[in-house]
Length: 310
Image (tube, rainbow, N blue to C red; front, side, top):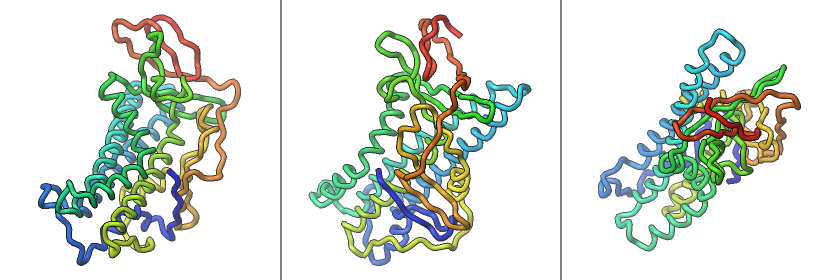
């Protein structure tokens, strides 16, 4: 989903929905009818949850990069930490999509009314590309016994760490799930994935703000300010801006999500005109499998299948 916004100070970088929900003076809400939180409270706890989960993933990714440089590190420990953090991050992003949709309902006394359905359906269509993307991943893991696996690509000057959703292909070979990874036999680099999700969180917030404005024209998003303490969202944005644009092989053909600091200011844009680079020829691909007692053939992303358990 396309999104672009500049913030004069990173501490004021919050989604438009957060700014709109701060300006509800004189606007009636009906959260009590549905037994849910006030719309601003609901958005605040949702975006805080997403921020914590992404921050945990960034922390685990930092450990993974340090481990990749040390032969003394217990690789299983950092792998488990990073996979668990990634799983929680993806869940929180899906929950955030549900939270944002639920916020709209709190502005209507009757969730069966035509006005509510019209506003909600228009909002749902506007965020469908990202909701479908994250929903496919989370639902596959939940309902198809999908598992997250790590992959790293190393070369003398660097390393690119990523993950993929493991599942069987049409021949029963375990590897990147064909319904998730398109093109097939690929993976997601954290260098692209984390900025991508952050750009979409802000994009969804902008679309939610538009929906709220259509309900009541008094609900507007003021221009972002510079005041405010550092929050987990601020930390996440700052650290995401430091990620390199070293992507996995196929990802250089995808749109680049941009989170860029310039002085104290911040720019968020997707898609951007920036370019990414792929690992050089001769890079070493590594990963691991976990046996299930039945499967005998596995495929790492970007590699041909191999027989036998590992």
